[in-house]
Length: 409
View 1 (cartoon, one colour):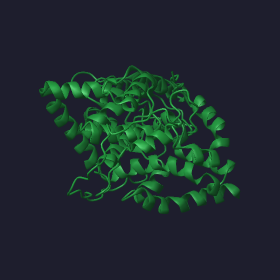
View 2 (cartoon, rainbow, N blue to C red):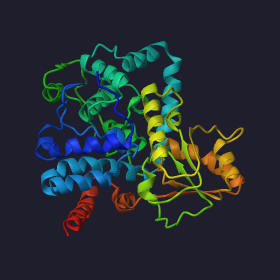
View 3 (cartoon, rainbow, N blue to C red):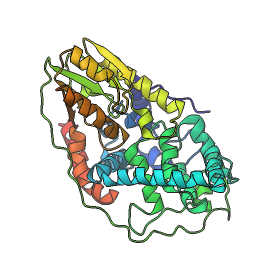
């Protein structure tokens, strides 16, 4: 069984250092092969730390550039940039997050009404469909909090086109169980498989592909759907703005808010001594269904690690906020410390951003401003997240080349 990784920055940096020699040709050759849990997959395994920004995309890319250069490690650097692309795409089109939550509520209501549909959903989420590969992946996900990216694609395709279950329920299942469950990457990847991201294109899990890249661990046959029809009438909604740069110098009336969306605030605000730092636990906001204990525990310990690394006179948390009813431990702590501005690394679209709105209103009522500060990596890359990934990469590649040139000077 895969051991849950340590949710701290020190482990993230050690994991990156251990993987660096393999980020070039080795990664490109073996990245699509899923040898199973404990099977020695050739991927980095950095995703739980990257998702929470215990390590930054810029840090990973810069380290790989120093070790290999862009030409030798382009496939791996592209994979890191997929996360940036998904985050930027959802930031430019927040309607997709709202649509997902609406589809989730509709799908859950519909599947709770019928005995057969409830049984089909339970069989899929507990690994009892009779499709060997799918059932193994469902169990692996629940037991380990992880699936290889290729297995995620196969799983989602079988969920949608073979089992004919609502894509949003599958996305919710992943988001509640993946240690690296990310609102943008997860939601938009499921939409892509189902044919909702790129008009006219879906992803079909083919038996031959599964056999090859699972290294014959699984040999599915005609039980899998043989076609994946694309839905009609899919159009991209209009683009929204990206966040603007925020230039500020924290002062004695400012406190720091840490969320699971960015757990290296010291990289954004170096050498700041905060009068108050608060870590906010938001993991349960991911779904109205239970989030796995592994996911909640990883995020909680990672928040505690970030809080411990923060230079602050007073630390609070990790704490939870309610739905806007009753007392707020964060507002109470800020008021007691004389805080007028609560500063946080920018929170992109998703459940944490949704849940911060009641807190923002409570803070405003106490005459305290909540300010999100975006990172320059996001500000540089998100504007190009408008269509498909490879159009995005055409804009991202020169930025990566510039980083490589600057490091060489």
